[in-house]
Length: 440
Ligand code: ATP
Image 1 (cartoon, helix red, strand yellow):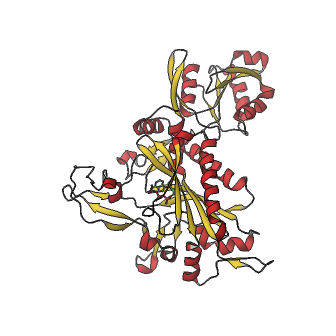
Image 2 (spheres, helix red, strand yellow):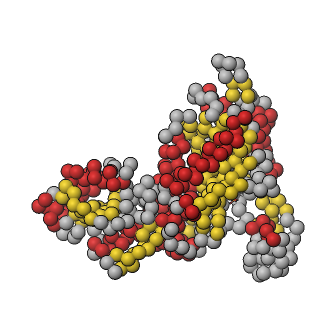
Image 3 (spheres, helix red, strand yellow):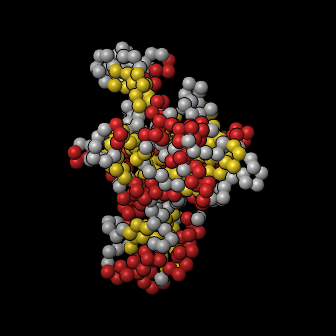
Protein backbone atom coordinates (compact mmCIF):
# COMPACT_ATOMS: atom_id res chain seq x y z
CA UNK A 1 0.00 0.00 0.00
CA UNK A 2 1.40 3.47 -0.80
CA UNK A 3 1.72 5.88 2.11
CA UNK A 4 -1.23 8.11 2.97
CA UNK A 5 -0.58 11.56 1.58
CA UNK A 6 -2.60 14.74 2.09
CA UNK A 7 -3.96 16.77 -0.81
CA UNK A 8 -1.91 19.72 0.48
CA UNK A 9 1.26 17.66 0.06
CA UNK A 10 0.22 16.54 -3.44
CA UNK A 11 -0.57 20.12 -4.44
CA UNK A 12 2.77 21.29 -2.97
CA UNK A 13 4.74 18.68 -4.90
CA UNK A 14 2.80 19.42 -8.09
CA UNK A 15 3.56 23.12 -7.83
CA UNK A 16 7.20 22.75 -6.71
CA UNK A 17 8.08 20.26 -9.44
CA UNK A 18 6.14 21.87 -12.30
CA UNK A 19 3.22 19.47 -12.66
CA UNK A 20 0.29 21.80 -11.89
CA UNK A 21 0.18 25.52 -11.08
CA UNK A 22 -2.81 27.51 -9.89
CA UNK A 23 -3.91 29.46 -12.97
CA UNK A 24 -3.28 33.22 -13.07
CA UNK A 25 -1.30 32.88 -9.86
CA UNK A 26 0.40 36.25 -10.26
CA UNK A 27 -3.11 37.75 -10.02
CA UNK A 28 -4.04 35.70 -6.99
CA UNK A 29 -5.38 32.69 -8.91
CA UNK A 30 -8.63 32.30 -10.83
CA UNK A 31 -11.59 30.33 -9.54
CA UNK A 32 -10.22 26.81 -9.26
CA UNK A 33 -8.55 26.79 -12.66
CA UNK A 34 -5.13 25.20 -13.09
CA UNK A 35 -2.29 25.24 -15.59
CA UNK A 36 -0.22 22.17 -16.41
CA UNK A 37 3.51 22.88 -16.25
CA UNK A 38 6.46 21.22 -18.02
CA UNK A 39 6.06 17.91 -16.14
CA UNK A 40 2.28 18.01 -15.86
CA UNK A 41 1.82 18.42 -19.58
CA UNK A 42 4.02 15.36 -20.17
CA UNK A 43 2.19 13.25 -17.62
CA UNK A 44 -1.30 14.30 -18.73
CA UNK A 45 -0.38 13.39 -22.32
CA UNK A 46 0.86 10.03 -21.06
CA UNK A 47 -2.40 9.36 -19.20
CA UNK A 48 -4.39 10.14 -22.35
CA UNK A 49 -1.96 8.20 -24.52
CA UNK A 50 -2.30 5.13 -22.26
CA UNK A 51 -6.09 5.39 -22.52
CA UNK A 52 -5.98 5.80 -26.32
CA UNK A 53 -3.60 2.89 -26.63
CA UNK A 54 -5.89 0.53 -24.73
CA UNK A 55 -9.15 1.84 -26.22
CA UNK A 56 -8.17 2.45 -29.86
CA UNK A 57 -4.70 1.18 -30.77
CA UNK A 58 -5.05 -2.29 -29.26
CA UNK A 59 -8.59 -2.77 -30.59
CA UNK A 60 -9.80 -3.30 -34.05
CA UNK A 61 -13.45 -2.30 -33.51
CA UNK A 62 -12.90 1.18 -32.03
CA UNK A 63 -12.23 4.37 -34.02
CA UNK A 64 -11.38 7.88 -32.85
CA UNK A 65 -13.05 11.27 -33.07
CA UNK A 66 -12.26 14.85 -32.14
CA UNK A 67 -15.46 16.92 -32.22
CA UNK A 68 -15.88 20.67 -31.64
CA UNK A 69 -16.03 22.07 -28.10
CA UNK A 70 -18.22 25.02 -29.15
CA UNK A 71 -21.50 23.37 -29.83
CA UNK A 72 -24.96 24.02 -31.16
CA UNK A 73 -27.77 24.52 -28.61
CA UNK A 74 -29.80 22.04 -30.67
CA UNK A 75 -27.46 19.25 -29.55
CA UNK A 76 -28.00 20.01 -25.87
CA UNK A 77 -31.69 20.58 -26.25
CA UNK A 78 -32.12 17.19 -27.94
CA UNK A 79 -29.80 15.37 -25.52
CA UNK A 80 -31.79 16.64 -22.54
CA UNK A 81 -28.86 18.56 -21.02
CA UNK A 82 -30.57 21.96 -21.28
CA UNK A 83 -33.44 20.64 -19.18
CA UNK A 84 -31.69 18.11 -16.97
CA UNK A 85 -27.96 18.75 -16.61
CA UNK A 86 -28.40 20.51 -13.31
CA UNK A 87 -27.18 20.31 -9.73
CA UNK A 88 -29.35 21.32 -6.75
CA UNK A 89 -28.29 24.79 -5.57
CA UNK A 90 -29.03 26.18 -2.10
CA UNK A 91 -28.11 29.39 -0.25
CA UNK A 92 -27.14 29.38 3.40
CA UNK A 93 -29.63 31.78 5.03
CA UNK A 94 -27.07 32.90 7.62
CA UNK A 95 -23.85 33.56 5.65
CA UNK A 96 -25.42 33.72 2.14
CA UNK A 97 -22.85 31.32 0.66
CA UNK A 98 -24.07 29.05 -2.17
CA UNK A 99 -23.65 25.28 -2.08
CA UNK A 100 -24.46 22.11 -3.93
CA UNK A 101 -27.18 20.59 -1.75
CA UNK A 102 -26.20 16.94 -2.17
CA UNK A 103 -22.57 17.64 -1.26
CA UNK A 104 -23.19 19.45 2.04
CA UNK A 105 -21.71 17.64 5.05
CA UNK A 106 -24.50 15.64 6.68
CA UNK A 107 -26.76 15.83 3.57
CA UNK A 108 -26.98 12.05 3.25
CA UNK A 109 -28.35 11.76 6.85
CA UNK A 110 -30.83 14.60 6.30
CA UNK A 111 -28.91 17.01 8.61
CA UNK A 112 -26.89 19.22 6.28
CA UNK A 113 -24.74 22.01 7.68
CA UNK A 114 -23.02 24.97 6.05
CA UNK A 115 -19.26 24.30 5.58
CA UNK A 116 -18.65 28.04 6.02
CA UNK A 117 -20.61 29.00 9.15
CA UNK A 118 -22.08 25.72 10.44
CA UNK A 119 -25.73 26.87 10.20
CA UNK A 120 -28.36 24.42 8.99
CA UNK A 121 -30.88 26.87 7.57
CA UNK A 122 -30.94 26.76 3.77
CA UNK A 123 -33.19 28.04 0.97
CA UNK A 124 -35.20 25.50 -1.09
CA UNK A 125 -32.93 23.63 -3.51
CA UNK A 126 -33.31 24.88 -7.09
CA UNK A 127 -31.86 23.35 -10.27
CA UNK A 128 -28.74 25.09 -11.54
CA UNK A 129 -27.67 24.26 -15.10
CA UNK A 130 -23.96 23.46 -15.29
CA UNK A 131 -23.41 24.33 -18.94
CA UNK A 132 -21.33 27.38 -19.87
CA UNK A 133 -23.24 29.58 -22.29
CA UNK A 134 -21.54 31.90 -24.75
CA UNK A 135 -22.27 33.79 -27.96
CA UNK A 136 -20.84 33.05 -31.38
CA UNK A 137 -20.27 35.99 -33.72
CA UNK A 138 -20.51 39.71 -33.04
CA UNK A 139 -24.15 39.85 -31.91
CA UNK A 140 -25.11 38.74 -28.41
CA UNK A 141 -28.68 37.61 -28.89
CA UNK A 142 -30.64 34.37 -28.46
CA UNK A 143 -29.88 33.37 -32.07
CA UNK A 144 -26.11 33.32 -31.45
CA UNK A 145 -26.09 31.26 -28.25
CA UNK A 146 -23.68 28.32 -28.11
CA UNK A 147 -22.54 26.06 -25.27
CA UNK A 148 -19.16 24.75 -24.26
CA UNK A 149 -19.64 20.99 -24.17
CA UNK A 150 -20.12 19.62 -20.62
CA UNK A 151 -19.04 16.14 -21.78
CA UNK A 152 -17.20 15.02 -24.91
CA UNK A 153 -20.08 12.66 -25.61
CA UNK A 154 -22.77 13.90 -28.00
CA UNK A 155 -20.00 14.48 -30.57
CA UNK A 156 -20.02 10.69 -30.91
CA UNK A 157 -23.79 10.55 -31.34
CA UNK A 158 -24.23 13.44 -33.76
CA UNK A 159 -21.46 11.94 -35.94
CA UNK A 160 -22.84 8.41 -35.72
CA UNK A 161 -24.07 8.34 -39.33
CA UNK A 162 -20.90 10.05 -40.62
CA UNK A 163 -18.66 7.46 -38.99
CA UNK A 164 -20.77 4.54 -40.23
CA UNK A 165 -20.56 5.92 -43.74
CA UNK A 166 -16.77 5.96 -43.80
CA UNK A 167 -15.90 2.93 -41.64
CA UNK A 168 -17.03 -0.66 -42.04
CA UNK A 169 -18.30 -1.23 -38.55
CA UNK A 170 -21.05 -3.33 -37.08
CA UNK A 171 -22.10 -3.53 -33.44
CA UNK A 172 -20.36 -4.07 -31.16
CA UNK A 173 -18.11 -1.15 -32.14
CA UNK A 174 -16.90 2.00 -30.45
CA UNK A 175 -16.05 5.65 -31.01
CA UNK A 176 -13.43 7.11 -28.67
CA UNK A 177 -12.74 10.74 -27.91
CA UNK A 178 -10.57 12.68 -25.47
CA UNK A 179 -10.55 16.38 -24.78
CA UNK A 180 -11.71 19.35 -22.76
CA UNK A 181 -15.11 19.63 -21.16
CA UNK A 182 -16.56 22.50 -19.15
CA UNK A 183 -19.01 22.55 -16.25
CA UNK A 184 -19.96 25.53 -14.17
CA UNK A 185 -19.55 23.55 -10.94
CA UNK A 186 -21.16 25.18 -7.89
CA UNK A 187 -18.42 24.02 -5.54
CA UNK A 188 -15.20 23.10 -7.33
CA UNK A 189 -12.39 21.92 -5.08
CA UNK A 190 -9.98 19.31 -3.80
CA UNK A 191 -7.25 20.61 -6.11
CA UNK A 192 -7.86 19.25 -9.66
CA UNK A 193 -10.49 16.72 -8.54
CA UNK A 194 -13.36 19.05 -9.38
CA UNK A 195 -12.65 21.99 -11.69
CA UNK A 196 -14.77 23.93 -14.16
CA UNK A 197 -12.46 23.16 -17.08
CA UNK A 198 -11.15 19.60 -17.26
CA UNK A 199 -10.30 16.80 -19.64
CA UNK A 200 -12.28 13.66 -20.31
CA UNK A 201 -11.65 10.37 -22.09
CA UNK A 202 -14.89 8.82 -23.30
CA UNK A 203 -15.79 5.74 -25.27
CA UNK A 204 -19.27 5.25 -26.71
CA UNK A 205 -19.63 1.55 -27.40
CA UNK A 206 -22.59 0.65 -29.65
CA UNK A 207 -24.04 -2.82 -29.06
CA UNK A 208 -27.11 -4.87 -30.00
CA UNK A 209 -29.76 -3.97 -27.35
CA UNK A 210 -30.05 -7.50 -26.00
CA UNK A 211 -26.28 -7.60 -25.33
CA UNK A 212 -26.14 -4.36 -23.33
CA UNK A 213 -25.99 -5.91 -19.84
CA UNK A 214 -23.15 -8.19 -20.84
CA UNK A 215 -21.14 -5.32 -22.31
CA UNK A 216 -21.74 -3.14 -19.27
CA UNK A 217 -20.18 -5.85 -17.13
CA UNK A 218 -17.35 -6.32 -19.63
CA UNK A 219 -16.45 -2.61 -19.59
CA UNK A 220 -16.62 -2.37 -15.79
CA UNK A 221 -14.00 -5.12 -15.52
CA UNK A 222 -11.92 -3.87 -18.40
CA UNK A 223 -11.71 -0.35 -17.04
CA UNK A 224 -10.95 -1.42 -13.48
CA UNK A 225 -8.09 -3.53 -14.84
CA UNK A 226 -6.69 -0.56 -16.78
CA UNK A 227 -6.05 1.37 -13.56
CA UNK A 228 -4.52 -1.70 -11.93
CA UNK A 229 -2.24 -2.36 -14.91
CA UNK A 230 -1.00 1.21 -14.69
CA UNK A 231 -0.02 0.83 -11.07
CA UNK A 232 -2.98 1.68 -8.80
CA UNK A 233 -3.19 -0.98 -6.07
CA UNK A 234 -6.47 -2.87 -6.36
CA UNK A 235 -7.38 -2.13 -2.75
CA UNK A 236 -7.43 1.60 -3.59
CA UNK A 237 -10.16 0.99 -6.21
CA UNK A 238 -13.76 -0.15 -6.04
CA UNK A 239 -16.78 -0.40 -8.31
CA UNK A 240 -19.98 1.13 -6.98
CA UNK A 241 -23.43 0.86 -8.54
CA UNK A 242 -25.49 4.08 -8.74
CA UNK A 243 -28.66 4.13 -6.71
CA UNK A 244 -31.84 4.82 -8.78
CA UNK A 245 -31.91 8.45 -7.47
CA UNK A 246 -28.33 9.06 -8.65
CA UNK A 247 -28.82 7.88 -12.24
CA UNK A 248 -28.37 10.50 -14.98
CA UNK A 249 -31.40 11.27 -17.10
CA UNK A 250 -30.08 9.07 -19.93
CA UNK A 251 -28.91 6.05 -17.94
CA UNK A 252 -30.57 2.75 -17.07
CA UNK A 253 -27.61 1.57 -15.01
CA UNK A 254 -24.27 3.10 -14.01
CA UNK A 255 -21.22 1.92 -12.09
CA UNK A 256 -18.52 4.24 -10.84
CA UNK A 257 -14.89 3.28 -10.60
CA UNK A 258 -13.95 4.90 -7.31
CA UNK A 259 -10.52 5.63 -5.86
CA UNK A 260 -9.47 6.01 -2.24
CA UNK A 261 -8.67 9.75 -2.23
CA UNK A 262 -7.14 11.23 0.94
CA UNK A 263 -10.63 12.44 1.96
CA UNK A 264 -12.46 9.19 1.11
CA UNK A 265 -13.83 7.37 -1.93
CA UNK A 266 -14.31 9.53 -5.03
CA UNK A 267 -15.25 8.83 -8.65
CA UNK A 268 -12.61 8.37 -11.36
CA UNK A 269 -14.91 7.12 -14.06
CA UNK A 270 -18.57 6.39 -14.70
CA UNK A 271 -19.58 3.40 -16.81
CA UNK A 272 -23.18 3.82 -17.94
CA UNK A 273 -25.74 2.01 -20.02
CA UNK A 274 -27.07 5.01 -21.99
CA UNK A 275 -29.51 2.70 -23.82
CA UNK A 276 -30.71 4.10 -27.18
CA UNK A 277 -31.64 7.36 -25.46
CA UNK A 278 -29.19 9.68 -27.25
CA UNK A 279 -29.41 8.27 -30.79
CA UNK A 280 -33.21 8.28 -30.64
CA UNK A 281 -33.32 11.80 -29.21
CA UNK A 282 -31.05 13.15 -31.99
CA UNK A 283 -32.91 11.22 -34.69
CA UNK A 284 -36.18 12.74 -33.50
CA UNK A 285 -34.85 16.30 -33.20
CA UNK A 286 -32.86 16.32 -36.45
CA UNK A 287 -35.17 14.23 -38.62
CA UNK A 288 -32.16 12.08 -39.66
CA UNK A 289 -31.96 8.30 -39.56
CA UNK A 290 -29.56 7.25 -36.81
CA UNK A 291 -29.58 3.49 -36.79
CA UNK A 292 -27.47 0.54 -37.82
CA UNK A 293 -28.60 -1.28 -40.92
CA UNK A 294 -27.00 -4.49 -42.11
CA UNK A 295 -26.92 -4.60 -45.94
CA UNK A 296 -26.41 -8.39 -45.88
CA UNK A 297 -29.43 -9.30 -43.77
CA UNK A 298 -31.57 -6.17 -44.09
CA UNK A 299 -31.67 -5.98 -40.30
CA UNK A 300 -32.10 -2.44 -38.85
CA UNK A 301 -32.03 -1.27 -35.29
CA UNK A 302 -30.91 1.52 -32.97
CA UNK A 303 -27.98 0.19 -30.93
CA UNK A 304 -27.67 0.58 -27.19
CA UNK A 305 -24.64 2.46 -25.90
CA UNK A 306 -22.28 1.50 -23.10
CA UNK A 307 -20.19 4.49 -22.07
CA UNK A 308 -17.00 4.31 -20.02
CA UNK A 309 -16.39 8.02 -19.22
CA UNK A 310 -13.19 8.88 -17.37
CA UNK A 311 -11.59 12.15 -16.34
CA UNK A 312 -7.99 12.63 -17.51
CA UNK A 313 -7.05 15.43 -15.11
CA UNK A 314 -8.72 13.77 -12.11
CA UNK A 315 -7.15 10.44 -13.01
CA UNK A 316 -3.68 11.94 -13.34
CA UNK A 317 -3.94 13.14 -9.75
CA UNK A 318 -5.09 9.68 -8.61
CA UNK A 319 -2.03 8.13 -10.28
CA UNK A 320 0.22 10.59 -8.43
CA UNK A 321 -1.46 9.87 -5.07
CA UNK A 322 -1.21 6.10 -5.59
CA UNK A 323 2.46 6.37 -6.60
CA UNK A 324 3.50 8.63 -3.72
CA UNK A 325 5.78 6.92 -1.23
CA UNK A 326 8.84 7.49 0.88
CA UNK A 327 11.68 5.36 2.13
CA UNK A 328 15.32 5.62 3.14
CA UNK A 329 18.34 5.26 0.93
CA UNK A 330 21.74 5.10 2.66
CA UNK A 331 20.14 6.45 5.84
CA UNK A 332 18.63 9.44 3.99
CA UNK A 333 14.85 9.87 3.62
CA UNK A 334 13.55 10.24 0.08
CA UNK A 335 10.18 10.83 -1.58
CA UNK A 336 9.54 8.56 -4.56
CA UNK A 337 6.74 8.68 -7.12
CA UNK A 338 6.53 5.03 -8.15
CA UNK A 339 4.79 5.89 -11.42
CA UNK A 340 4.35 3.34 -14.19
CA UNK A 341 6.94 4.06 -16.93
CA UNK A 342 4.13 4.81 -19.37
CA UNK A 343 2.85 7.57 -17.11
CA UNK A 344 6.06 9.10 -15.72
CA UNK A 345 6.82 12.52 -17.24
CA UNK A 346 10.36 11.39 -18.11
CA UNK A 347 11.30 7.76 -18.53
CA UNK A 348 15.03 8.45 -18.44
CA UNK A 349 17.30 11.12 -16.99
CA UNK A 350 20.80 11.49 -18.43
CA UNK A 351 23.16 12.71 -15.74
CA UNK A 352 26.82 13.52 -16.44
CA UNK A 353 28.66 13.02 -13.15
CA UNK A 354 30.32 16.41 -13.45
CA UNK A 355 29.87 19.50 -15.53
CA UNK A 356 33.46 19.19 -16.74
CA UNK A 357 33.79 19.75 -20.46
CA UNK A 358 35.29 16.33 -21.11
CA UNK A 359 32.02 14.60 -20.14
CA UNK A 360 29.69 16.82 -22.15
CA UNK A 361 30.19 15.34 -25.65
CA UNK A 362 29.63 11.75 -24.51
CA UNK A 363 26.68 12.72 -22.27
CA UNK A 364 25.05 14.53 -25.21
CA UNK A 365 25.74 11.50 -27.42
CA UNK A 366 23.94 9.27 -24.87
CA UNK A 367 21.04 11.73 -24.70
CA UNK A 368 20.65 11.73 -28.47
CA UNK A 369 20.69 7.94 -28.56
CA UNK A 370 17.87 7.73 -26.02
CA UNK A 371 15.65 10.63 -27.12
CA UNK A 372 13.96 8.71 -29.97
CA UNK A 373 12.92 5.87 -27.62
CA UNK A 374 11.98 7.70 -24.43
CA UNK A 375 11.20 11.14 -23.02
CA UNK A 376 14.52 12.22 -21.50
CA UNK A 377 15.58 14.79 -18.96
CA UNK A 378 19.15 16.08 -18.93
CA UNK A 379 20.54 17.46 -15.70
CA UNK A 380 24.11 18.50 -14.96
CA UNK A 381 23.53 20.70 -11.93
CA UNK A 382 24.28 19.98 -8.24
CA UNK A 383 25.59 16.77 -6.66
CA UNK A 384 24.66 13.42 -8.16
CA UNK A 385 22.83 12.41 -4.95
CA UNK A 386 20.57 15.46 -5.14
CA UNK A 387 19.89 14.83 -8.81
CA UNK A 388 18.83 11.24 -8.03
CA UNK A 389 16.50 12.60 -5.31
CA UNK A 390 14.91 15.01 -7.77
CA UNK A 391 14.36 12.26 -10.36
CA UNK A 392 12.89 9.98 -7.67
CA UNK A 393 10.50 12.72 -6.61
CA UNK A 394 9.21 13.28 -10.16
CA UNK A 395 8.94 9.54 -10.84
CA UNK A 396 11.68 8.99 -13.46
CA UNK A 397 12.14 5.19 -13.62
CA UNK A 398 15.74 5.20 -14.88
CA UNK A 399 18.79 7.44 -14.51
CA UNK A 400 21.73 6.99 -16.86
CA UNK A 401 24.95 8.32 -15.38
CA UNK A 402 27.94 9.24 -17.49
CA UNK A 403 31.20 9.31 -15.47
CA UNK A 404 34.91 9.62 -16.06
CA UNK A 405 35.31 5.84 -16.57
CA UNK A 406 32.90 6.21 -19.52
CA UNK A 407 35.68 7.97 -21.39
CA UNK A 408 37.76 4.79 -21.14
CA UNK A 409 35.25 1.91 -21.30
CA UNK A 410 32.36 3.52 -23.28
CA UNK A 411 29.94 2.21 -20.66
CA UNK A 412 27.39 4.04 -18.47
CA UNK A 413 25.50 3.25 -15.26
CA UNK A 414 21.75 2.65 -15.26
CA UNK A 415 20.15 3.31 -11.86
CA UNK A 416 16.70 1.96 -11.07
CA UNK A 417 14.31 4.33 -9.25
CA UNK A 418 12.53 1.69 -7.17
CA UNK A 419 15.40 -0.58 -6.13
CA UNK A 420 18.21 2.04 -6.51
CA UNK A 421 20.26 -0.80 -8.02
CA UNK A 422 22.94 0.23 -10.48
CA UNK A 423 24.25 -1.73 -13.45
CA UNK A 424 27.02 -0.91 -15.90
CA UNK A 425 26.01 -1.14 -19.58
CA UNK A 426 28.05 -0.49 -22.75
CA UNK A 427 26.74 2.53 -24.68
CA UNK A 428 26.32 0.29 -27.72
CA UNK A 429 23.75 -1.80 -25.80
CA UNK A 430 22.10 1.09 -23.97
CA UNK A 431 18.99 1.55 -26.12
CA UNK A 432 18.18 -2.14 -25.88
CA UNK A 433 18.87 -2.26 -22.13
CA UNK A 434 16.72 0.81 -21.44
CA UNK A 435 13.84 -0.46 -23.60
CA UNK A 436 13.91 -3.84 -21.84
CA UNK A 437 13.82 -2.19 -18.42
CA UNK A 438 10.92 0.08 -19.35
CA UNK A 439 9.15 -3.04 -20.63
CA UNK A 440 7.42 -1.58 -23.63
P1 ATP B 1 -19.41 14.08 -10.19
O1 ATP B 1 -20.49 13.18 -9.61
O2 ATP B 1 -18.07 13.94 -9.50
O3 ATP B 1 -19.83 15.48 -10.42
P2 ATP B 1 -20.17 13.05 -12.71
O4 ATP B 1 -20.77 11.75 -12.29
O5 ATP B 1 -21.05 14.18 -13.06
O6 ATP B 1 -19.08 13.50 -11.64
P3 ATP B 1 -19.50 12.15 -15.31
O7 ATP B 1 -20.50 12.99 -15.98
O8 ATP B 1 -19.75 10.69 -15.17
O9 ATP B 1 -19.16 12.77 -13.88
O10 ATP B 1 -18.09 12.42 -16.01
C1 ATP B 1 -17.15 11.40 -16.25
C2 ATP B 1 -15.82 11.71 -15.59
O11 ATP B 1 -15.37 13.01 -15.90
C3 ATP B 1 -15.87 11.69 -14.05
O12 ATP B 1 -15.76 10.38 -13.57
C4 ATP B 1 -14.65 12.51 -13.70
O13 ATP B 1 -13.46 11.73 -13.76
C5 ATP B 1 -14.61 13.52 -14.82
N1 ATP B 1 -15.20 14.79 -14.33
C6 ATP B 1 -16.52 15.11 -14.27
N2 ATP B 1 -16.68 16.35 -13.76
C7 ATP B 1 -15.43 16.81 -13.48
C8 ATP B 1 -14.92 18.03 -12.93
N3 ATP B 1 -15.74 19.04 -12.61
N4 ATP B 1 -13.59 18.16 -12.77
C9 ATP B 1 -12.73 17.16 -13.13
N5 ATP B 1 -13.15 15.99 -13.66
C10 ATP B 1 -14.48 15.80 -13.83
